[in-house]
Structure formats: C-alpha cells, structure tokens
Length: 224
Image (cartoon, rainbow, N blue to C red; front, side):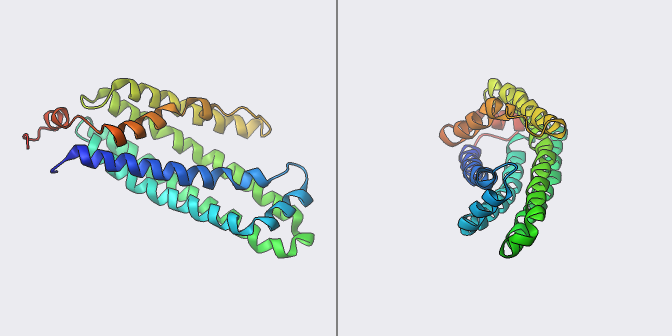
C-alpha cells in the first residue's frame, strides 16, 4: 500500500459519512412517534412520507457504508492482531443484515398508511417491532467496538486512549439493548454518553491518520 496514512484518512471520511446518514436514519422517524397516540403518530407520518422514505434510504446506505468501513479498518488494523480483526469484521457482517431487514418494517408502515383508519393498530405494532429490532442490532453495534478498540489499544500507530474509549463505548450499546427488553419506557440512553470514542477515532483518522512509519514497522512493511 503506497500510503496507509492517506488510506486511513479516507477511512475516517467514510466513518464520518455513515455517522451523518446513520444519525438521520435512526432518529428521524422515532421523532414522529407519539407513544400511545396512534392518530397523532399517523398524522405525523402522513405529513412526512417523503422524509420517512429518505430515512429508510439513509439507514440502508449507512449499513452498506458500514461494510466498506469495517473492511477498510481490517486493512489498517489486521497487522496488530488478525484474530481480533476478523472478529471485528464478523460482528459487523452479522449486524448489517439485521439492521437492513429491520428497515422493511418502515416500508410496511408506508404501505399501510393509505388505509390507516383500519390499520392503526398494525402501524403502531410495526413501529414497536422496529424498536425491538434496533435493540437487537445494537448488540452488534456495541460488540464490534470491543475488538476495534482493543486493536487500537494494542497498536503502535494510533493513540491507545482512543482504543479504551471505544471498548467502554461497547457497553453503552449493550446496556441500552438489554434494558429495553425489560423497560421499554426507560429514557436514559447510555450509548449517547459513551459514544465519544467513535467520534474521536473518526476525527483522528480524518485529521491525522495513522502514523505511517510505525504502521509499517508493526506490519513488517519496508519503508516507502
């Protein structure tokens, strides 16, 4: 690879883009839902059908981007530990299809909207179904961060503190998932407070990239 530094900066840019699309895809439609009030929720959905469709597209693009991202990260981090790098990829490969299939629930909601008077209960059930789907896929959104963070922690070419924050962030997603299965109305989301590692690593990659000399040393690649 001619410039791992440049490649790592491109990886950071991909990470940034999926963070933007993912934030929109996962948060927009839930903002239209009024818990326990089907008429208000359906009215909000009717008024924002186009944006709901864009939210679905954004979520699907995010998942496709996540596939590219983890493969790019594998290229960067595999020299640190191939087993951990492969585990990181596997966890993403499991989570991506779950997240993509979960978007079908919004598609069915859009199909039912024209007959909302007779399908209000089904629409609300589908919205709840998607929320449970998010709780499931969040397990993998958390788990992949642990080997990701571990690899950075053990690397010579990225700050080890970033790796620690990523490993801590793993438990935010896991906590949110398991709490949701027992207390769906629990309002505190730990992932929001523990996501800083993801933000820091994408900014670090974009701005500084990896230390190319140290990466080549750890990867056993001759200097350019």
